[in-house]
Image (cartoon, rainbow, N blue to C red; front, top):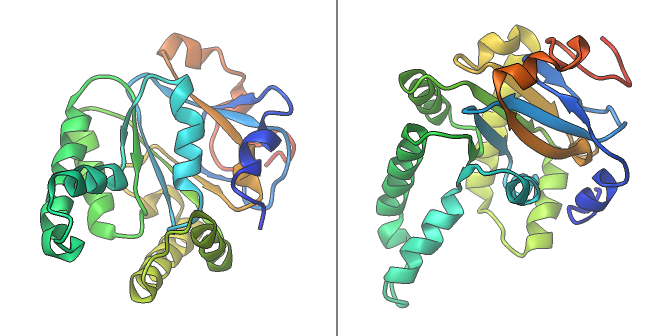
Length: 238
């Protein structure tokens, strides 16, 4: 596995090229130049994947350069822990934390401006909720799915000294396996409501150097091959 800390240095060796995903964009197994993902100014970008796949690392890399809201369940959990007695086990207030996270997520959809959402993407009901909120508040919904092998995700968990229980992890694996299989078989129809789904593995995620939220005028001036669907990749044209 390529270490998560190497992601930033590897991606920053050259200036990234722009890529405006549409449809299903599969970068798995495709090494090459760094890319800057470009989306509409008020787009919602969900970063999904197994625990330990590198979601938090990717969002931390992108966040300083963009003025975007970030919704992360870990941040909600830490906020709840800060106001709870130290002797109280997390399991006792887990339902309240999860409810608060959903309320925070819906509230973020209502606010103007771009939004980054940290989510495993393995739960069908959460994917439907995100799509419903995107429709309700007239926002484009995009997904960046870190489809790494389970061994890479487990190694990522060990590296951060934060592990997920075996039963929960296996449930995430099953959910994401079903989703990636459906995307390969049915394309974007497997994720209703999403304008684009970008698939990256442990190698190609290093290329995701930056994200930008642009006005329609700026997006319109991107080269055509950076805006079409299927596999938009200058190094490996479709």
